[in-house]
Length: 122
Image 1 (cartoon, rainbow, N blue to C red):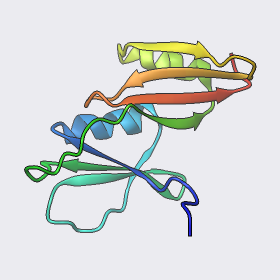
Image 2 (tube, rainbow, N blue to C red; image 1 turned 120 degrees about the vertical axis):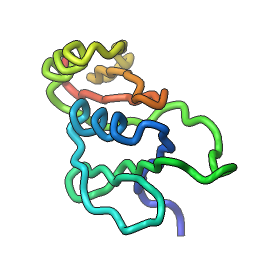
Image 3 (cartoon, rainbow, N blue to C red; image 1 turned 90 degrees about the vertical axis):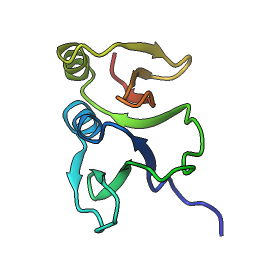
C-alpha cells in the first residue's frame, strides 16, 4: 500500500502556548482533543482532522531535523494579510507562474515556515 494523503505534521516547541496561539489565532485551526500522553502538547484541527500535533518538552535526542515548510490550502487572503499585520508578523507573498495561485509565507514561533495557498485570490 502506498501513502494516500498527508495525515499530520508534528512540531516540537519550547513555546507551547505561543505556538497554539499562532495556529489558532492566525491560521484559524482549532485546539481539540488529544490523547492523554505523559508529555505536554496539543492537537490542532482543520475541520475534523488533527493536522498539526505539537509536542512541548520533547525527549532528549528526539528532534529529527528541519522541515522546510508546511502548506495549507486557505481562503480569505485580505483578512489573512490584515491578521498578520495586526500581530506584527513578517510575511512575504508570491504568485505561482501559470497558475491562479497566490501564496503567503510566514514563520510560526518555532521557525517552521508556513505556506498558505490561496487559489483564485489576489
